[in-house]
Amino acid sequence: MRALRLMICSFLVLYCVSSSFGDWDEGDPYKMHYPQLPDPYGWDICLEDQYLADDFTCIEDGYITDIHFWISWLDDMEGDPYIDWDISIYNDAGGAPGTLLWQLQQYTIQVRYYGQGLQGWYCPSYPPAIYNNHQFFYQVNITGILEPFVQEAGTTYWLVIRNNNVTDPYVVGWKSSTTAYQNPAVWARDLVSGWTPIVYSLEVYDLAFVIEYVMQIDPFLFFSPEESLKRLPSIIDSFKNLLCRCITEFSVEG
Ligand SMILES: [Ca+2]
Ligand SMILES: [Ca+2]
Image (cartoon, rainbow, N blue to C red; front, side):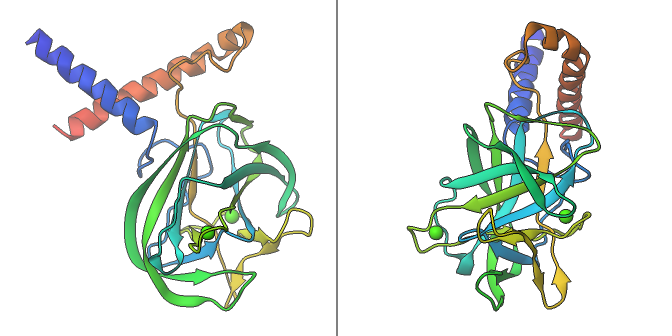
């Protein structure tokens, strides 16, 4: 009996760790104003040839270890979603990205099928929009970030994304969100000529993403000994949260 319990617990911990360090599901923790969930009947804004950005406000000091966002492909013609991502965080310059604060370097990426619904396609640099263009959408999970950005509670930042794979004919888009927050999402052809709100037919859009902090396997990996001591209470909290999630998920699943 004891061995069986141990086996179940080990499995549970493995399951929790694997689910915590990869996908993001509704109900999982987040470190922004609220998760901006994908609209299954919304729009995808093309991510090639231009940068897209949307704002978020940090709700708790600490690292951003996971970035999740939702994508679709023009005409449902799927290219390689694992390459050529350019992801960064900017400060807020009064309603648009201002100064570059952080750029994604080394990371792990997982992409999974997420859902379907009839969605439109819009490229602000190449209008007009295409209604009822595609059906399927996917969740991109950026985890294992080696040098994560440290965000401060109450501060608004901009998540800026572009896909640089222009050598294949497939074009990926960032999915619109069911919820809006503060400023509408913006686009820019390059990083010097300025940002423009994404507007189509007098509608503005926000984009689907979630910023998350997940406890790393080695909690001291990113901290000096002094910093580790200072952060010990929050590290213990993170362990407690992870454990609670394991227990909750175990209870729910019987
Ligand atoms: Ca392409
Ligand atoms: Ca926004």
